[in-house]
Length: 277
Image 1 (cartoon, rainbow, N blue to C red):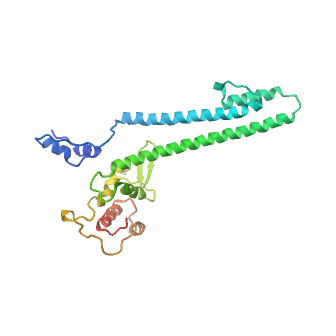
Image 2 (cartoon, rainbow, N blue to C red):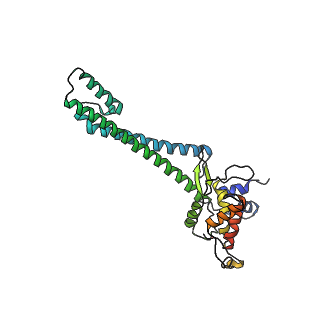
Image 3 (cartoon, rainbow, N blue to C red):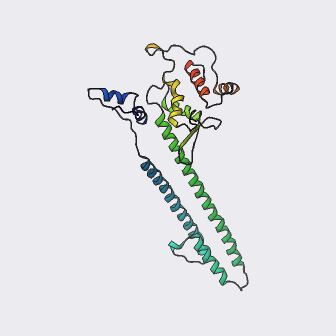
């Protein structure tokens, strides 16, 4: 009985189209070379992301605790307060300082006490600064994690063979023409330069990176090649159109960036060599 979804399996493994069917039908032994991939189930992927989150959280919590203790150690002697190392938290320090002040109630407020109150205010401001710095670190870490996931998805979607330009240059070109974000479930959303999400024309569901890459990379896979692999000279005459002018031209015709008609015309012009890349 034939396997119905061989094509999808080949795409998931980045195999050449038809290679699995050829192996099934062949009477000879055939070796299928698998790319360097890490394949996870949905449960394994969720566990992997959870482990990353826990790792970043531990670093954040450990760093925050150390920063607070260091700050208290720098100031505790001048207040005449003693705290065990494990009790050196902001809350315990503030409570000890409050207890010390309560003992001074009824006594004349001398210069030393005023200095202590000033120092206490300065300490609170320093602690707020430490908290702010750690919040910035957490935001930067989450941003780096997001960019890493997007880069890995793009790398996986770039065709392994047949590109007319360097893979890294092609990756830069692809990223310059699109915007990327994550939805609430961590799925990558691909947008055009106006911020509109690429969607399936029939289901209106967001297109995955490999679907957008399929359409975008098509003109570069057989760019300006004729019979025998020789350059057939397409598009070498006449001025080339910039991307911005092309986008404005299509907008005037009622075709927004990201629509099927926009992408189809863009691919045609790239193939003809009339677009600036």
